[in-house]
Length: 473
Picture 1 (cartoon, one colour):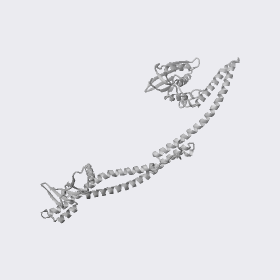
Picture 2: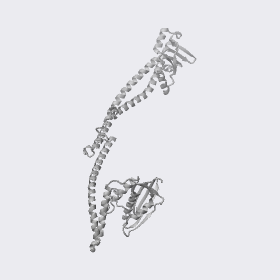
Picture 3: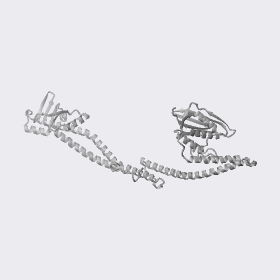
Picture 4: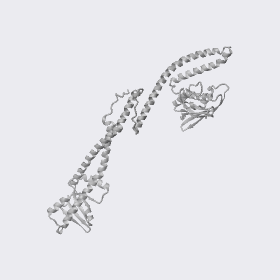
């Protein structure tokens, strides 16, 4: 059983569009911060090493200024502590000298060259450093910036403990994480409220309007009133309003037509009985010896016959259902030959019947229904030629479809009729017609998976194109 709008479960808050927008905003901001964090922390480690290298260089200069490059052990310890190093070695072109050391490093886990500034190498090394134990040491080598400025051709190798660097790296990561969370929340909140006002609320208004209209489409007060926006949502509101107005008008027309059709069915039923009685009386009038009566009776019988046919056609169309298709496979050319024998052209008509269809062309479908459709088209063609001309049938198989063309050499279809050719009661091309024949024929063709269309029409004649699926035999 379908739930009514009030019975439908409401969307949970965390699954709403607003919540999803907020979560997506926070996720994208955090992703952006991660992309910024990785190179930032790699550069932070590199700068930390450079600072230590410069401090070690300054400590080495103090040692070089001392007599015989020797300093008091307490001063050496203070210099190493100021540099944050375990040992400092100076590399000159001709020798490598241990300048400062409070102990010989025993647990050097890795060595790094400051000159190697490849981004991928820096990123790899920073995460490797963060995974090292605190008690390990690393060796860094490079040329101090101050030494380069002073023109000294020296390089330094400095042994540093990993523990202080890791503490700085984790503290830096914590600051970045805190900043990222704050930026994400602020940005997410601003984006959330902006999108909620600009998109979510209008979409909810559209949803409410559609739900309300679905409950009572005949109520004109439930048609949405466009807000006047010029963006996509404004266009959606305008299109929804137009669709609702058109749907209301179509439903009103159909309701009136349904009521009118029901009344017409009753009127047609009674009228057909009355006309049947009139036809019996007119048949008896045909036996009258009165010349005037004998002259007028055929016209009376013909008029009554057309009226009975119109009533029968209207009643048949009003049932709105065709029997199920009884499919069979048959030769199309033979079906067209049968149509010729039933076309019932006026006496004295000089109409040439040209059946150019290949006798070996077989189609699959309901033979009776297709016969009715072709007969209708052939009769229309015969009546359009005023008793003289030709009716031609051609058929080809094209792209998996059987295409049949029924052409006549009549005067063509007027433009006023052409626009409503397949609309019931509106496509009447001749006086006395019901306007149902082509509408019913198209319904039959579409029930077979095909179609019926006007190919061309003019002073030299009219051609209808009929299409059917080509089922392999």
